[in-house]
Length: 363
Image 1 (cartoon, rainbow, N blue to C red):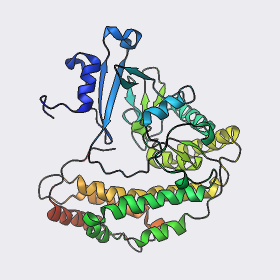
Image 2 (image 1 turned 60 degrees about the vertical axis):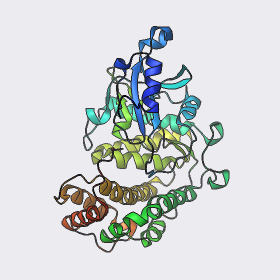
Image 3 (image 1 turned 30 degrees about the vertical axis):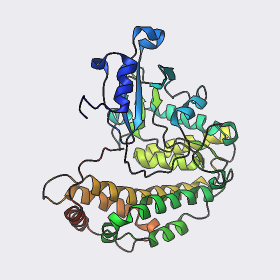
């Protein structure tokens, strides 16, 4: 964006900072345009650290169901309850989040690698604090109507709403543009019926607050090896085991560390609220199967939109989507999964019809 037409987020950052040269950004991110800056001396003690402001990016495709009306309102309500949340302040009419100086966990330890024990313990501590936040104690405005919220403990109703959102807001809402591509990779509307049947019959568990997006880029490790949790945009109230399943799926721990974390999670949430891990031996696998199925619909669209310029066949994207499809074959009831070269050909044909979409920022 040219300096003559700054975005709202950049304009707010410059106004709060008072020095355009001290503003850093935009930071990499999918949902928001974010800038980081120090406050001037008139801010007093607040000037000793850097802060960030951000605005939602326009025209985005949302692949996840959102629960709360405002992330900032949620973080305010969680102050003192979730200790890994960076502070929030108001300055000049803006609500700012403290910027944690450090590196993402993904930069410290890439996906597939184990994380140090001191950081794993802090992940378990976060799950403990989340389990302590019960629905009736969280007074924050929500987006969804009361009638669209499952009763406390209705894990089947909770998951069915997530499946319905994926079917209606991701698959059907984008079918005009992506129908042929979905068909070519072997995924149709009947997959949702198979998925619902596959994940049915979950054990009831008491609901709590979920972050719902705990991957390595949403953890920041500061110089003192303290772990901070950012990006609460997708937080919701629901089945605590769903948060663990999402975390395990996104983190890609080595199997031995995933088992260790799971054991610690079970003992931790049971200590906080008995019944929170009930039925986990069966249900954890089913919830992870849902995450695998969810990735099919989001990754097909993202792969197509991210196709770059040139006539070369997108072989890398074809291999990646093949792996995603193979992982989800059972929960979606896919009779066969097309080979990587066939997936790449399907993406290339989509590009030929729809043109080169350009780069899409990663989540």
